[in-house]
Amino acid sequence: MSAGQRENTTDELGERVIVSELELMEKAQAELSPARFEHTKGVVEAAERLARRFGVDVTKARVAAWIHDIAREWPQERLAQVAEQVEIPAGFALIPAILHGPIAAHLAAEWFDIDDENIQNAVRYHTTGRVGMSDLEKVVFLADAIERGRNYPGVEKIRALAEQDLNLALAESFDNTILYLVQTHQPIFPLTVMARNELWEQVTATQASETHHLNHE
Ligand SMILES: [Fe+2]
Ligand SMILES: [Fe+2]
Image (cartoon, helix red, strand yellow):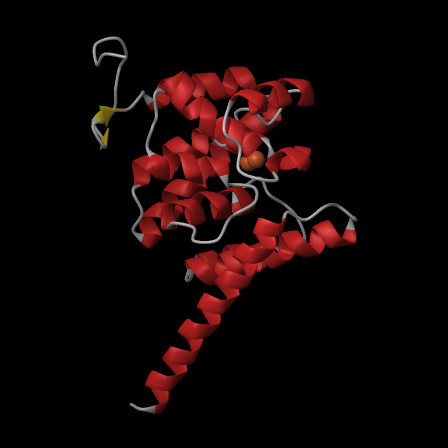
């Protein structure tokens, strides 16, 4: 893609000038039902807010948010077909509900020439999380969980935590999701459990060091 072919944003991602957000929005609208498109717009807005709050690249957060659910409504056969052709992280193909993340990450490159690893990972792991998430990945995961249209038991608590503490809000969000999966007898992706354990470990370590500082002031 040359710069002249499309209207581009002024932000540069690595070497490459990125596709315009207008194009991402139109593609998302074309691929999604009106309700899911509304959700995606909510995630873009929430991702921008969180990115600003926690010092993450706002453009990357918005771009990842536009793309994250782009394959969410594909029939299972279409997802499986693409999954055969691309590299899908281990285990993803076994749980249909999480496959749309890795597929959308592939489409980011295929459809929009976005080869930024961080954006791709934010899209790839937006449903599962993973160990060693970047701040961008955390922001997109959390934005997906708390965008304005979300309404489930516990969302207000996660929203409130997201005003202050990215890791704590995310750890709470993982527990909320895992509890829900247990209660509805759905499979839990092992990587999600590992990500959840790591986050609580980080939260606990941070809280312990803060307490330590307070006690020694
Ligand atoms: Fe999703
Ligand atoms: Fe989503």
